[in-house]
Image (cartoon, rainbow, N blue to C red; front, top):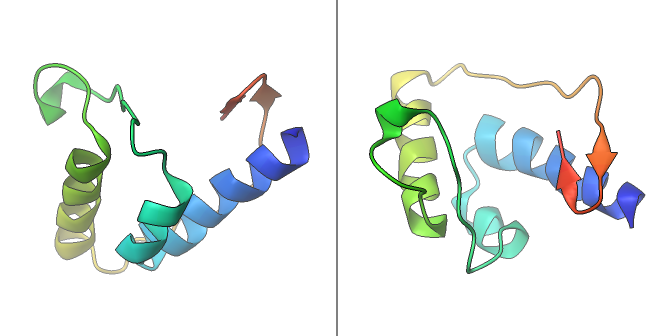
Length: 80
């Protein structure tokens, strides 16, 4: 399970965040996702659509944004 979780997290960073593939976000992110980000994103957690909206705004603001995954840690169902 941990290798699968790491692969999903890596795909999310590389293909969704870096490449802007929001259709893949629907495949990789749970429909009941709750994203707890920095307070600047607004009060309370974001749902999947809210996170996609933020990611699209980041991509528009920083079109050359590129994230590389060098290390990953897994604890249960969480990957960082």
